Image 1 (spheres, rainbow, N blue to C red):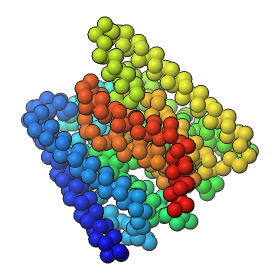
Image 2: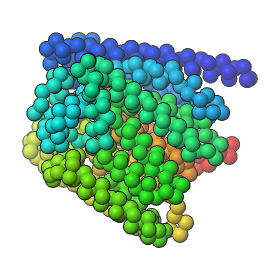
Image 3: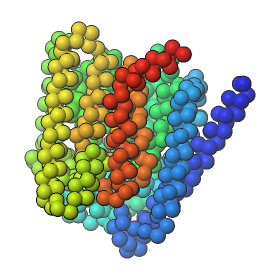
Length: 473
């Protein structure tokens, strides 16, 4: 029996390696082809080349689905993967290497580098749009607005942009190297924080080799890997009682990407309930000092601060319930574009209002719980973030839910959140492309993004019952 299990594990490992290799080759083929097509005067990076793309996309999806199936199978087997972090890294090296080699399909990396070049040339990217400055990266740019990424992100953009004069390809891979290093560091931090967990190596391995994290945070080099780092540090500070340092970590996360700002009221409410007046006062002082410093340096105007809110997608939808509604409205020829936009605007406002009510209710409940602890605070942060993405975010990119996975790894007392966030994170990357369009692929993409996690929320009681039976068996 043991030999059969061992052979099955070797087979699954081989299938995973093969699928990852095919995925790496397909992504690199698409990415490099697009890169050189742009340099030769091709169309916008997102629009070409068209010949052969469907077949390659099919290959990438099949290989991703295969790797995903192996990953889920491994999770259900609950096989431990070594007794030390170094052992886990040895198992992970082939997958991490292939993720690093694979060339990004997303053109966000070019936005990062272009903003970095602007910063190196003393041009404030929060006051000047991307098309106001010409660099060797300009042919790849189609997002013609000011930067939506914070000053901490800009530092890493600028360091990577130092290599642009040598070759944009080198700059791309240097930033990917940063992403690879930070992702590995994130897994190590989780390893340290799970010191007393029986499933320590399983959880860390599951995080390190999560297909969505490998694809979005290393292959496509999205800076959410930096945000995940600050989140893990924040949770570590919270669990160790270093609350002021935790607040500082949240602000550093905000200076990577704006999302962490929604966590601050929950933290302040926790400190208020615990009557930690010194930590509360110090947290307010730290927040005030950071806001003042940033205002007098990187974000000197209201418009610069508003740039962080990504105004370019204020009326856009993708991969969300809002996008499904938008697609349904497009099927009615009598509904004009103006009417459709008005309906979507009303729905968006309503969804945000509902989310705010839920957020305030979460804050209120925390004040009346006698046993409200740091673990409960982390769980609440996870739920308000998940609900924001799932129900109140019209423009939902596949890498957004990746920030839920560090919380899932460190809040195992809430198994419902773990499964829901894992489902929400794994599914969006299955269909590459078509997220914001109005074709059948877009319908499928949006559906598999939002429906599975929503179903898990609705079936919470049944899920809890199933988990209880599984644990007993």
